[in-house]
Length: 356
Image 1: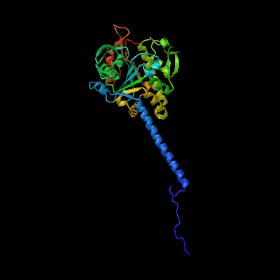
Image 2: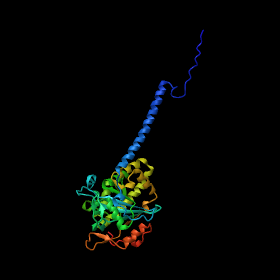
Image 3: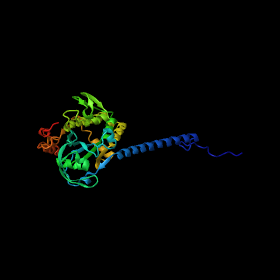
Image 4: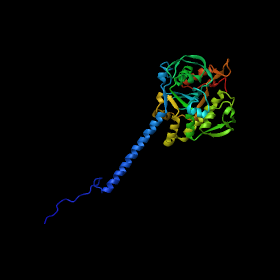
């Protein structure tokens, strides 16, 4: 009588030793996990590529050349912020205008001192008569220098790099970065924030198609915010100088709203704001990526909008054309010198003969 001497089979603890049904379930679970991981990575890459693709850029060094002011204080930053006034495309739909070309009706040189403590924003009136330096236009052709031209005409004639060059020659300050936001991008950013709150100390009358608001606090959506910063005739003295005050007020309110919402602590909110903010954004080439913008924004977290100082470049009414202004001296020179050397701005340098 023979006896089966084969050793009894032993079940392994891994996948191979599991019953067929359990093995199939395990493989399905692993496959699902792999798909989720790859999907998350793909979505992250898509989001990053999408936001990067939103940003246009200008190579300032290439466009301007080497003849630029030296950097005086290494740790300080000077950023030229432009709001473009194009009536083309989506911007035309917002403004219901039919004006060819583009203008830069909002221009602020934002100085952030070494240590990132307290920033200063200097608004340059659009109607200021300046000397435009020789520049290369967007088509590569040379735009000759000219005297007594309106500041906002530089953008429409020769593009943003020439605006940067003009500001550098006016001030003797090296512009480290340049940021431009057009109408549509501005509206989208405000709407992504859920609105911005502003407070008026007197009514806005709505003259010439502008926004009509009572005195007091108002929560503005993107469209009304755009009307707010462009209001000229319905508030104050109806001048461009008066409009600058509204623009500065709104900038402070929007920065306060961004800080209040703690976008960096909320990835979903951050993506929504980044998508809206980058759709109509043009920067210098050094900032023209999501990672570069994020690093720069992170370095600016110490700047509190509540302590930011807003100043208008001191100007005086032109003696030939009262509808235009010219740079007031010696106030402007004192202002630029203080910012260039990262020093406190003298009170006398803030006194503009034309106040608006």
